[in-house]
Image (tube, rainbow, N blue to C red):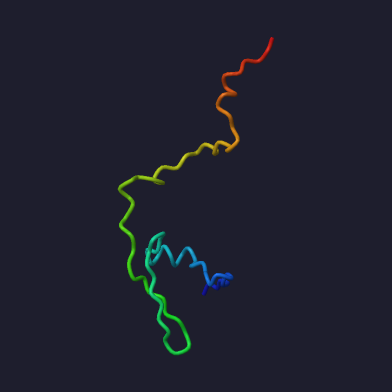
Length: 80
């Protein structure tokens, strides 16, 4: 069983394996119920599937380009 800590704002991180098994993603609505001395969490609704966009389907084998990389540097010619 995974454990997590509560932030100062009362937030917790749901472990990745549980999010994947329950289909919880950004925009999901979660319902909490108090049952005796414990809390039951239930997925109330999930947002529409975003798979139609294709975002994130392709992975690159190339290393990511650094954020500070300047494409204009390709135009500079070395002095001879």
